[in-house]
Image (cartoon, rainbow, N blue to C red; front, side, top):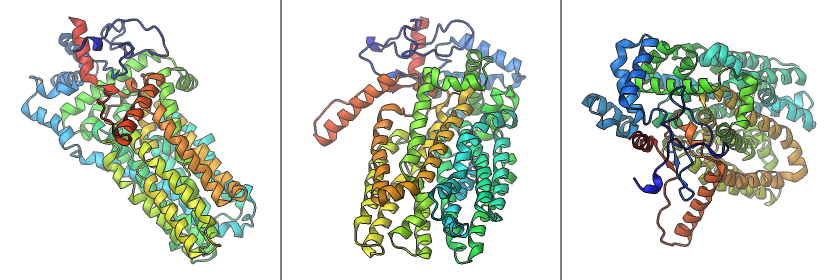
Length: 621
């Protein structure tokens, strides 16, 4: 180990903002934990702090035995001791003499065959995917339906009422639905919250289909938003808490991928029922009742989140569920014990806190504040990249460019299909290339194609085939680059960014952000289109895509391939150091790839748990 890489493990924190409090493994002082950022002014690297690193083996085994005794798991003591050793030094786990060849092979397969998982995990992923499709279909069934109910209720020329009816679900999500997440999850757990939210969505779907006035429709859609809010906050968290780290991003991003599938289904319903006159819009909106009922029937077949069970003291049940969701008992014991340690450390420093204090901690605790800012950025940009202008108003936009109603519905269906199909590449890149890189790569293209779509309205007159072709191409190419980037990343990122004790509150904040700006977008688009014309309206959101690139570069840390517990330390790195490194990294890439200079590679910004074990061993000598 280089001299400047050594860390004094008992160095006192000098600045709470720069060196936020860390969690110790025991009640006493954190004698074996390194200072994350006290590594010298010239070293920008950040260290993931493992709460088990540096604990002497004898003490570790004693603590594991006490854990097994307290929760009646002594029959599995040996496997828990092995699991604790693996958690303490994950990078060198396959060299531990205590492990058999079969156990070492299982650990190796986590990375070489990471998709080899129990069928129950994939069944859970299917349920979460259908819950996402519920949301997507709820969003876009209204796209085609509004072409029929706006003139029926005589509100097509009233931009305020039009925006209010279209945006009602997102208003409900932002002000009520998302904030129901924490109490619902506290009393009904993850599965119960999903069941309740889908049942509400099913009721609201039928209600929409039988409305006889715009006021009644507004109320029905507002109730729909109550279900969307808690569901969108809970499903990604549930998937994240149940998934193993190597494929967590891919499984959690199924939320957005299958939301895109639901968006496609909603557009297909518009085409399928578009020729039935007054019955058309009722069937479009009412058809959304099917999927939530399927989810209600499926959700209780899935295991409850083991991390939720740990948080509520149900350790034996959590172990049973981990064994269902992991290939071997060893991996289940490892994940259970490591998660338990993290939960207990958080519990000790957060004892007696309520919803209000936890909400305040999103902004007052530096680690939480960084997660709050990062999740706010990705959620805000999911709306202000302009995608839901296309999702909610593409039929009217295509009509504005010169399409008839039938062709406009077909063209809208094309955007939905592309949104779903091009989400597929993210399944294979979100855990390898990373969340940040997907956003940084796609944002410039989103800006380009929004400018393309808007400026194409200057071509010829309404109905000109060149205009039709250019507008359609621009919107389609926008969907191609949105789907693998700003599509799947925000919900995946927000579901994993917050520590467990504020995860429900943090996810409520994140989803309230996206639904608040979703409502603002859907309410203001008719006014924006009237005031700025299509050219200025599309240009407005294109400019936000440019701004989004810089926000992600400076303020959104990478989270790929780390356990939810390790992410605590990613967000404990100061924003100043993170931004400074990313600026240096950007300049380095510009000099290497644009100016073609030959430079030494920059050191990696993050270092893992293995390094911490090294530091802990050095400190104990």
